[in-house]
Every structure is written in C-alpha cells, then in structure tokens.
Amino acid sequence: MKWQTDASPNIALIKYMGKQDYDSNLPANASLSYTLSDLKTVVELESTTENSDRWEALHDKNLAYIPKLDAEEQQRFLRHLQMLKKYFNYQGNFIVRSANSFPAGCGIASSASSFAALTLCAVKALQELTGQKIQDVAVIADLSRRGSGSSCRSLFGPWVLWEGDKVKQLELPYFKLLHQVVVVSSHKKQVSSSEAHKRVKTSLLYEGRTQRAEKRLEELFTAFTHKDWSLAADIVWQEFWDMHVLFETSYPPFGYMESNSLIVLDYVRALWEAEKDGPITTMDAGPNVHLLYRQDQEEMAKKVRSDLSSQFSLL
Ligand code: DP6
Image 1: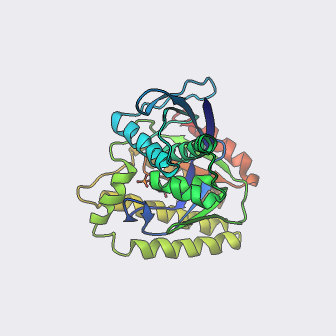
Image 2: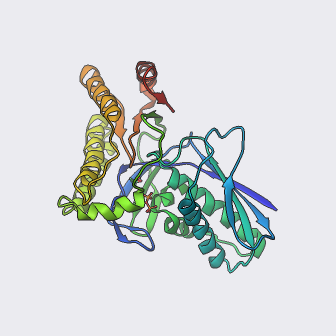
Image 3: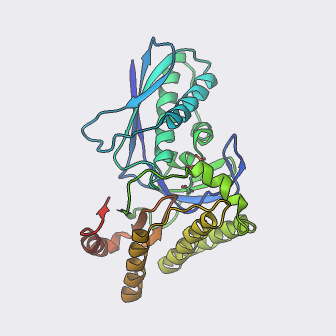
C-alpha cells in the first residue's frame, strides 16, 4: 500500500532562533510566518516487509529537485517516522520517498515542508493501518514540531503564529502575497539550522534576543493591522539581520551571507529608495533572499525578476 502527501515551506518574518527545549523543539520566542503555497515537498510512504524503514529519492517529473539526503539527514527523517509509528503503536515498516519542487538545504525552509509532509503522510497511513484517528490538527502540529520546529507552521496558512507549544492561523491583511526567492546559491549549507539554534546562545548578543523578537512581533502585528507596508518591511529587515548577526557573533562564528546576497540586498534597498515602495525582504539560515510583494506590486515583481535574472535564478 502507498500513501502520498505534500506540504509547503513557510518563510518566517519573525524568526524561530534559539530553543527552550531541544528534545521537543520548544522555541525561545514566538515566530510569525507566511506559508509559500507555490512550493512543495512531496512525501510518499510504501509499506514494506523489509525489516527496517528506509529512505530513497522520489522520482516524479513534476518535482525538479531530487533531494540528496546524507546518512545523518536520512536518519533524522526516519527517526521522526519511528516516533510517529510509536505514537500509533505500529510495528510495520515503510519505504519513505521524498522530492521537492525547489532546492533543499539552502535557506528555503525545506526542513519545514519535508517534516510537515512526512508527518501528514505518516498520520494518513497510520490512521488507515491502525484504525486510530487524530481529530485535532493541533495534535498533528505538535507531532510535526518534534521532528523539526518550523514544520509546525507549515500545517496552516498563510499567516501563522507559533508560540511555545501552540500554533495557529492568523487573520491578517495581505492574505495573498507574491513570493520570489533570489537563488544566490543552491549549495547545501555547512551549519544546519538545528546547530544554529544551539550556537547562537554563545553570542554575547544573544542576551535580549527573546525580548527583541517579541517586541518586533508586536510591532509587526500593528504595522500589518494598520496596513503600513513600509514599516512592516523595515521590521522584517531588522529581524533577519538580527539573526544573521547572532550567527556571526557566535562561538565559533558561522554565517550564510554571501557577497551575492549583499548585491541582492543592495538592489532591494535602492529599489525602496527610488520607488518609496518595495518588497518585504528576508533571509533564512541560507544565502538566498526571499521577497514578498502585495498583489498590486505585480509589475514591480516582474521588473525585479527581469533586472536580476541575468545574474541569478529566481523561483
Ligand atoms: C532560520 O525548524 O529548521 O529557518 O527545529 O532544529 O529543525 P529544528 O530547526 P528549524 O529552524 C528554522 C530556523 C529558521 C527560522 C524560522 O524558520 O523561523
């Protein structure tokens, strides 16, 4: 028997960076994300009589990016499946297959969509195989969070608030945004997000991080509620820089920013200065730059694509 599910990544505007509890991925601060419904990870599960679970790439002509999970990443994915099997008290095994519609492991939140898709697919399979039902999506989000924190936000959308062990959809203006990723590099990152969560605590600037994130979250709500796009863009800009500065001031320091990321950021800044308007800009734990536009900025999004596409690929 086979089951298939997909889930989209989400981009955090207020970042989850630093954990209160590493085993259950409880965050140090609340985060706010926008779900990127044009991108997806597909996970397929097939029940097998083999004596253990295993992962392999899913080959599907509609999914351009076949992930190359190293042994450790495969183990992490399979450990999450094993936790879900235990929850359902199920003894059988599965072949797990996955693929993405976008490059993985470079700051486009593939761990969020992969773990959300795996959780949804496993819950679907295990409900059918065991006859047990999970009625509440909050329980599924809780299970998904244990695999990878940010994945709990991918079960909702588009606007999602995650606070402690609670995650919920929010009604905010700008329901339908246009999203672009300027792909500066699609190489796999050297330091994983999970490692980054630990390392940032060694930065002398970590003190006050929780308060700064919470304050920005409040300010961002207010900006969105008053439809103050420009203020929202400033807050989101400050927030991603805060996180990247923590990376560079950790022991040992590490970073994801590349010279080409700075070229894109400079371009966006010049655009804002010239037009007195522009996209909300953010970066995750990777060198790639995410741009979010309002519906009425469609022409601007096209211009940005044509200006940047000779140098970078854009998703
Ligand atoms: C920079 O969810 O990947 O993307 O819980 O260890 O799996 P784990 O970490 P992960 O961290 C994501 C960090 C981030 C910011 C964010 O998505 O909020």
